[in-house]
Image 1 (cartoon, rainbow, N blue to C red):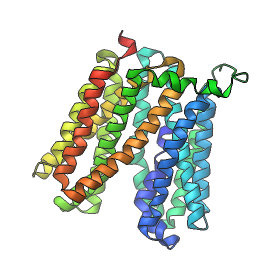
Image 2: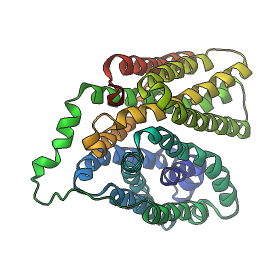
Image 3: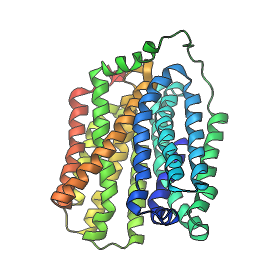
Image 4: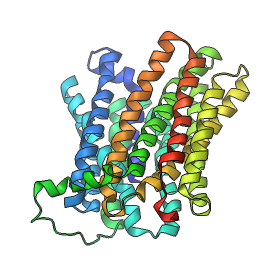
Length: 378
């Protein structure tokens, strides 16, 4: 539920950006920059959480993150102007920087290794299931009362429910008392994490995968609408199909990671993700293109869960720092992918876009194969 709760704010902005811009009498381009501000907050604060995870309980950080998420929704509901909306929505980026790494870190604390892969698959599924539930719910509610009503009736309650479930449902674990530690000691986790080649390779692979997949998702709808003249309502179903395929992939990964290992699964799935991203924009037939699109999402779901498992085990003594840096690298990857995708479309066309993005995923597969080590398989 904590990962589910991080998605509705982003979905609402994508679906109702035009309406929000009209409310504050600003252009769509300017209004869209609140998403940019939120992404910047995620990258910056993900690194800060890597430090704080040494000092504070991981459950406490997750609770604070969800509290920021609820505060963000509440602030947007009552935002009187663009500046207040920008500030309020930016808190979503801060919340994501806390919720994403801490949710995975807590799995390692509460689940033994043999059950951890399946648990990761379920948590990651929470993100994509949100697309299936939140998108139609937000659209339906906003149709009656506007975008603020969608925040009030859906987004805020989901955030508060997730907060309640975390507080009541996740046991508290003992944490080493760090009051006597010097400020320099808090950075020890970063020193240890970045001293391991395999850990750095995991960060790099995560950035490349997020660059490939997020950009493919971002530009994919435009591809189908312009090349195959797909109407908007059918394009939304394609997004739903891709999200469902991703969810299925993460569940498959959760079941296979113990059998095949997180590294081999990450390598093979990342490779096929790249192949199918290249393929779906380079075939003329609509049905074949859709099949490749959904297969790419399926294998990306496998890759995301498997690579998360691989990253989680790199430095067991500093998992909070490890996953926080991984979250920051994923955020940077999203920015990189959007930039590369936009440049490819500016200079060339969708075929070259698919090749450039798919190549990033294949490069990630090579990095996982050559530079990473699975500590659980030694």
